[in-house]
Image (cartoon, rainbow, N blue to C red; front, side):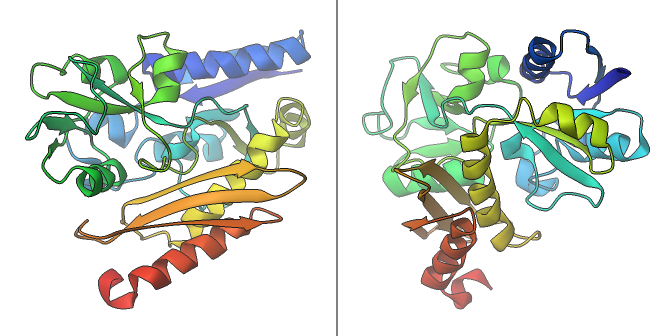
Length: 297
């Protein structure tokens, strides 16, 4: 088999996740040879700007996808939560690795929960979704926009902010000390949070056959339900949104979703069950209806 060139961001977490994919491939196909090509994305270049002002979802993946389409790399490894719901024509997600913890974690100097943080505490996050849900639960807290990799954001605790909210999956994969996990019912995760996605060209049949062998079926079903939710909100949607799907007995898919208004003053949450990933789309449309068109216009 040819040398497989894998594109990824250059952060420690991105490289670790890429090595997880390389190890999974090597275990199933010991003769496989892979090379890592790091790519600087717009999200990396504009590291100080709030995500919702520089394009939101996609700023960490578009440049990598461009190189994949050009044939400069053969595979791309992403955190699924960074990907847009609709892929560029010619690209597919060939494999989802088994999901890590999907929850968010709160890190503070005193080991506080979100409920017992002191009034007026400054909570750091760059996510509209997290900001909206923090305000709903604790309107007395001040949410501060911060960016950077996981270690650099943790380093701000006790300095520029009193607490930060991070994805548990990244913290665990890096082997860092864990914070206080937040229940998904009070902090609904980002669609795809905790899942590593491997993207390939749809025409590359040789790699498809290989990726099918590392694909985790239950994770794929849940991931696609959450991506259906995201897609139903529209490619130009810039609203606080979260979704978390689980498989229940048999083939039932249960998905919890949240959607906030553009000014983040209203948050609606709903759970729905279905027999396939399309339940995610139905849930998103129901939440949009509950918020009503006037709020979303």
